[in-house]
Length: 122
Image (cartoon, helix red, strand yellow):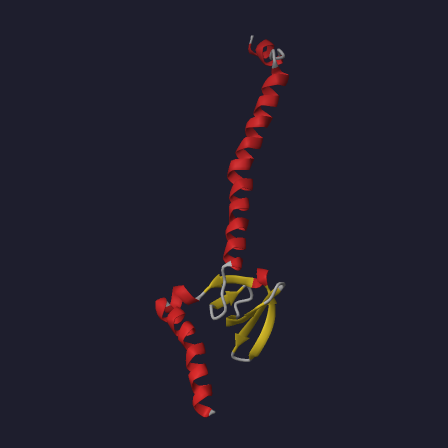
């Protein structure tokens, strides 16, 4: 009796298979594709909002300060000098995480201090 039940073809098997494929696609979209798109959007916004003077960490682990922003990348000032990197190489901003509000205040004050020193020298 059980062997006859297992051998019988289910009715409407093709439409059920199509529904299951649709459910799988929707599941993949919400579990894999949508979060990846959100992450890419956050990275792009992060890279566009970086400013001169921000301390950053690159994907290679190099720490530095953004000295100049160009269309195709950043000039990063490190202890060994100035190096040019692609925008995608910036992994995270280190200014707020490590130095807090002091770093942004100091970065804003430094150009003003340099101008004062230059005018005093003249």
